[in-house]
Length: 128
Image (cartoon, rainbow, N blue to C red; front, side):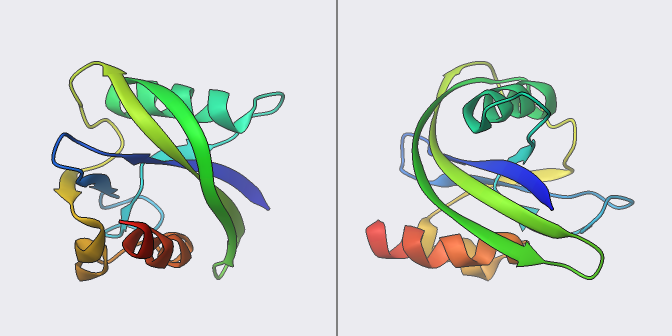
C-alpha cells in the first residue's frame, strides 16, 4: 500500500490545478491532482508541502482534508488523501509533470484523470 497526498489548489477564478504525468513515468498521460508519497515519519500535511515544493517549486498552506480513497492498480494499491491547499509563494515550475491546467470542477472529467483521483471528483463537482 502506497500512502499519498494530493492538493486541491485553486486560482483566483476558483479553477483547480491538475498536472499530467509525462512519458516514461507510471500512469504516463494521466492527469492528477499534484502531490505525492508520504515518507516515513512524515504527516500527510508535511508530505504535501514537501512534494509541492519539490515538484512545482511552490510553498503552500495545507487546509482541511476533503476526503480519502483507496484504489488498486495492476501492480500496486494507493491510499489517497486529498487536501484543500492555498498557494503562499512561488511561480509553478513543472519538474515531475509535462503539462498543467487550471480547470473548473465540472470540467475535470473532460481530462484523462488518474483512476485513484476519480472518486474525489464527484465530491468536488457537488460542492462547487
